[in-house]
Length: 425
Ligand code: ASP
Ligand code: MG
Image 1 (spheres, protein in one colour):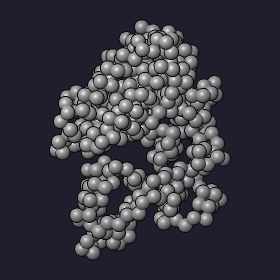
Image 2 (image 1 turned 90 degrees about the vertical axis):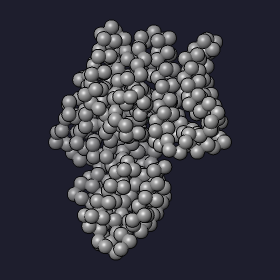
Image 3 (image 1 turned 135 degrees about the horizontal axis):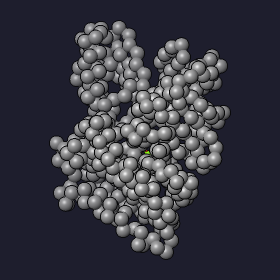
C-alpha cells in the first residue's frame, strides 16, 4: 500500500479539493492512506486565535468567524444547492472550538495554564476541519474512504507543540485500525500534524509536521512508497519563488535530502526522512497540478553527482550571549545555555563562538521573547533581528556571488560541502 500526503496549499480552496478527488479516483483499486494538512493558511490563523484567546484580546471572535466563513464557503462552492445539508458536520466542529475559546464566558485561561497546552487544544482544529470536509466530499463523489482521528492513532508524550512520538503504542493502534479498512477496499483519510497523549489530550508534532505524520504511517504500515503531493513540481535546488533559475532534482539520496531539509529546504519537514530511510521506503515528491509528471524520488544512497542547492531562510534572529562575569565560553557556560535552549524547544540554525561570546541564529518566532528573558538572567544578551540565512550545499565561488549580490555577511561558516552565510535582509 501507499501513503499519500496532501499539504495545505493543495486544498486551499474548492478547486483544490476537486483536484485532490481527481488524483485519488485513479487509486480506488489500491486504496492509499491519506494524510491531510489544514486548508491554506488555517494553521497560521488558528495560532492568532490561540493568542487572542490566551491573552484575552478583543479580535478573538472575528478571527473565529473568519476561519468559519472560509470553510463554509468551500462547502458552498463544492456542493452548490445541497451545501446546507453538508455543512452540519463542520458546524459541529466549529461549535466545539467555540465552546473552548468562549470558556463559558469566564474570559481567558488562568495564567498557570501553559500557553503551549492551550495551543495544542486549539490549533489541531485546522486538520480536524479539513479532513472532515474532504472525507465527506470524496465519499460524495464515490471515492470511498473512512475518516479516522489521528489522535487515536499516533501517540505522543506531553511535549506540547513538539510531541515526541511513542512508537510502540502508535504501532499498536495504527496496525489494528488501518489494514482492515484498506482490505475492505476503502481509503483511509486522517490528519497530519496531530497526535494524542495517553490521557487523551491533543498534541501537535511541530509546525509543518504533516510530512512527518506521513512518514510515521508509512513506516508503521511498511508502505511500498510515500507520496507528498505539492504545489511545486518536486524537490528543487532552490525555492523558485526566490530564485527563478531553480531546477528540479529528479532523484536524490536520503542522506542528501536530509541535509537539505535540515538546513531548512521547505519542501520536506526535517523529521520525515529518518523513519522512511530506516525502512527503505522511497519518498516521491509530486506536483499536484501535473500528477502525470515524475517529480522527485528520494531513495537509497547511491553515488550521485552533487547538485548546488540554495536554501534561504528569512526572518532570522542572531543572538550573542556573553557571561556576565567575563568568564570564557567553556563547557560550563555552554551547558547552561543549552539547558535553556532545550527547555524552550529552540532549534538552532547556526552557531559560533569566540572566547567571550556564543552566537546563535534562530527562526524569529513567538518563543524568542521568553528565551531572551531567561538568558538575560545569567548572561549579557544582544540580538539582531530581520536577518537572512543563506545555505549553499555543494557551493562554488560563483554560486556564492550569485546569491550574495554584493551584500556583506555578518557571520559565515564553511565546511567542505556546505557554506552558511548570515546577511542583513
Ligand atoms: N497545518 C500544519 C502547519 O501548517 C501542519 C502542516 O501543514 O504540515 O504547520
Ligand atoms: Mg500547513
